[in-house]
Image (cartoon, rainbow, N blue to C red):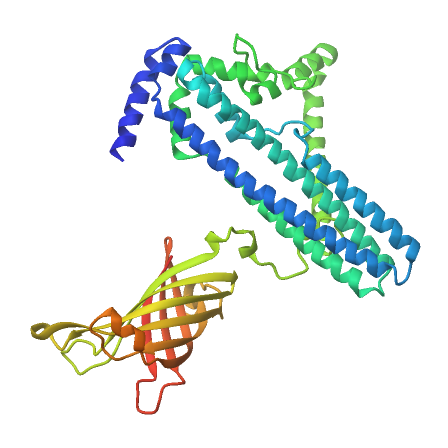
Length: 483
């Protein structure tokens, strides 16, 4: 934390003191070059993962369409051959474009990448920074190309989904085509969700970026550099040395409001004021009409009449875990279980366990764990740590109720919890004794309550061991945290 404060103080003190670009860059900490390189490298890794997902998805959906085309042969051989050939050509064309060296199309405006591009160019004034930052510029251009690539794949998959749906309507007797169309729409829905998530992460700046840009924004040299090199400035025609007034800039030949008002005054005189009021009232009326049209479109989407229903209202039960990377679907945790003993004495035994779970979907978690059994003696005046055994666990949690609010908060976020465990209860003196353990099997079933607190989740469990022999403890209580 102290290093960040020191860097910020140097930045705020040094940058405004220079009036030339090279001097400003010289005052910038050298480690910033490495920060930029690491940041862009991390974004590139995330983009590479998306590319691999795209190729796997395209191969999977191509096989799916091939199966649908072979099913079509049962009723219409000519239509099936035509469909299979069109499918083959369409996917070959798409893969050819994706494997090309450069994506065609208008470069999208991405605020974070535009800021990074300007920052990289600005810092590239020194000879020391050029080696690292020239590579960063190519990486930024590559990320923009990946953005276009994602949109290209999304448009292609939407077209193929529409074609499959048309086949389903034309041949409703073929259940294979109906199932393929449903699966295709499902895969398209999750791809759109992953693409939106990737775009959001790509456009989220790091803390050091916001700090650096805020400090540089106070430097006149950098402000002038932005006007001359920013992609946003080029979109609005603001790239000039004089720094024009934004209100007077025309976009794509469009006239400004001030220009229109001047023309009205010259041609209509005093009547221009009433005309302006009439135009304003008509604009409000047109805006109301546009709202009505938008509401109609929304109602059509809800009724399933839109071609983009996969993203607006999916016909299947969605699973938000599918769009997360594997590591983000893991759930780490620990819990403590104590055995009962008479009052004013330590528990007879303690189980300290760690677990690793995997979220199959939003309501189902499965995992494994290992427990260490120990005792601490009988009382404070007779503390004696002993090794009582070990345990191996497997568990399954299924969400019974969603998180509640108000009076229902206590009953919300309830889970049905169960599992099979292998326990060794005899004390052992060293690790060598674990080779000849006598395992006992436990079968647990019960309820769990999860309480969300910041990034942690407190977990309380009340379980019944239905495999426990008669006379032994059959009900256990555990508490712990998941991360």
